[in-house]
Length: 140
Image (cartoon, rainbow, N blue to C red; front, side):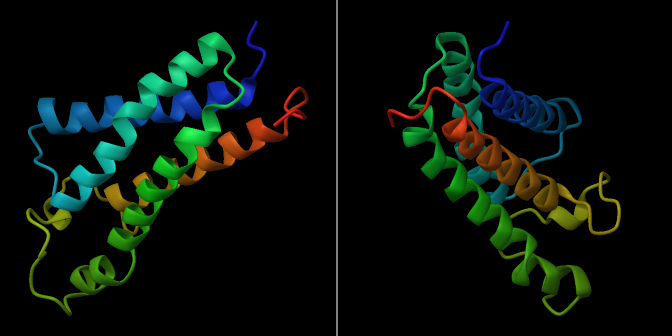
């Protein structure tokens, strides 16, 4: 039985994000833009680090993963917010960050890669913060 369910939830989100990112990039051959690559740099190591933390019941994993998650969240928020919104509405003629995310066949209204990434990083952050507040973390 898992002693720390919040760590498990954080790992599941990171793992699913990694698998979906690789699936879309490698199987569906959809090349990510530069901002998506920066988010991948923040996400991919989390799958391994959080898996080890769940296995070892590491009580201090948040100290070295929360900054990484927060950086990934900020990049996703930036991509989803002003520049991406302007690009989406046609104010800016093309994406200045490489391949445009607007070329994605996987977009449903405002639900796009940047939004899903932002949501994923947000929930990983929430679950890591909740893991700090679980019983047994009083000594931190």
